[in-house]
Length: 417
Image 1 (cartoon, rainbow, N blue to C red):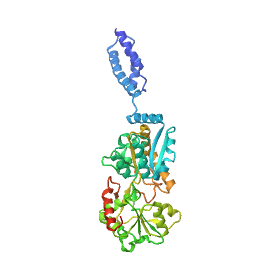
Image 2 (cartoon, helix red, strand yellow; image 1 turned 90 degrees about the horizontal axis):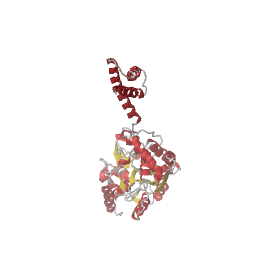
Image 3 (cartoon, rainbow, N blue to C red; image 1 turned 180 degrees about the vertical axis):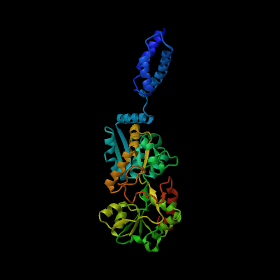
Image 4 (spheres, one colour; image 1 turned 60 degrees about the vertical axis):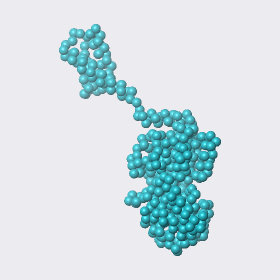
């Protein structure tokens, strides 16, 4: 009985793989040589056997634990997501046309061959109509939505979105130290649904005709209220979705301007409103109006040699704008794994590098991503956040309602409903 037990012990000790000559490995090597095949045993040999059994059990346990060690939970989750997305074979993203070039760059398909990225691009109003029409008809086609704050908030209120926070998996995405101010930025009060990935410097988005205006005359936003410019200011109708929402929130919520500034701008300057984007830029470029609030396409027009440009930072400071950079996860998504895969890739270093690079190539300057561990060479200098500048975050959730009421009342006061 004793012989079998000690032979088993000797076999067990010898079964443990060698670990080198020093420390624990050296002791086990010594034990392998010295344990006899059977009795009689000296006291020293018995002690050696017991020590060998104890140490061998430790080493064997460690070896088994190491060989059977599970991959990190996030890696297992990610592997399942990638495999599921490949099975689905597709992900469908609805995106504002401003950011269309990002998804047309082919970067996602190169990262995940075999998974088709279907892109539906357009302006917010068109995307909203299409999406809501599909949902009413029982068609669930969209996986991810990428538009501005107001539309995203409307979708959340209509219970068309799932929480995006639980699908963030990649450590480089989850790690909030990689993001501006050391945190993820959300534009909903619960901080779960509307993930914001851009915060570009916002100087008011006011442009001028270079033949009719000397920009050095303007150092403060209050200079635009000078009676000299009465009847000479053009403005996009801010009551419709589009450019200018962040700028007017800057005016309204800034402690030095506030609602009274907004009221004066729309009630006392004899402002002319437009809704056709091309008409606004045309009127500015031809000199029909020397100043325009929230004209679009000014940068490109300037590059083409037209006499238009944008005012720089005023003494009151600057705001921060998300633009169309709100990322949301549509509920009842037909390609749940594909949606999760896309969201994590898009928010990763590679995804955000591609975001800035693609828009720089398309527009000659990109918005400023909230990731701070990527280069900013592709960011438009006018959009880049600058250390030392005090910014007012103008993309607050539900911030437009009181602003628009002031605009409505001011226009009524001026007889310009």
